[in-house]
Image (cartoon, rainbow, N blue to C red; front, side):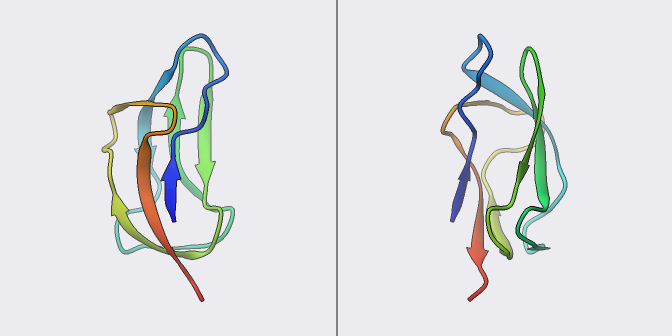
Length: 78
């Protein structure tokens, strides 16, 4: 499951990844915070939509990302 940047509700179409709370290979639980992003007007935390293992991180902390950009991938627990 690929986790994408959300649609940003403020005036910009991009945000900056501030930090990740996980790394590749980490086990995550549904609802656990994965990363924090900042836009012109807000700090946003993105949570895991399902439990699983972080298989890949596509954008590094400090990167500017657009709405819909792929940020990381989770392999869901079965």
